[in-house]
Picture: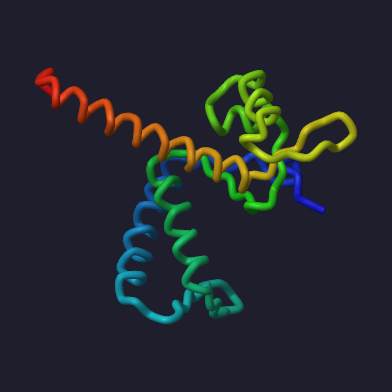
Length: 154
């Protein structure tokens, strides 16, 4: 069974103080990652004084989270297997819900029915977005080449 987006928190929007702390932490993590260590040990300084070992991919993800928080952006973490409603998928793609439904009906993005409701995996929405972005860049490159051939000043 797939995870629903509604099973997760709405995200974290940092305060100004948290954004500054995220920026400081980000600089430390960047330096640690640049050292190309096989693992990083983070020391939690509380009464227990525990040491936590994180896999490098988790540290890279943490770096990305801190980077967004340092900019003051809110952050939400979702597994790729999470399922979105049609409205959530449309919002992610920055398109209208009717346009998204057209994409689903044209089989450009896979989905499944839960009763009469469509559910779309986040992974599939992101894959569509990558394909669409690549196609847009290809077309843009072709237009630029045509403009240069026609001496349009670009």
